[in-house]
Image (tube, rainbow, N blue to C red):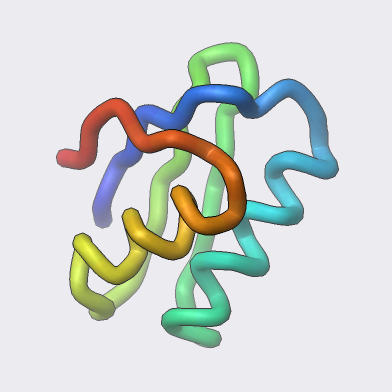
Length: 66
């Protein structure tokens, strides 16, 4: 599992956009978001940098990934 600290998430629409972006890289990825904590957890075998790039391309800057 990879945890991203993401800036700019404020609602379920944001969560949906990030989920679609991640699943564009890995359709089988499981995404869990915590809007107040600005945290997104992704269960995926895809490359971390590819997932990060997809989230950022969706308009949500990634502060860190662990």
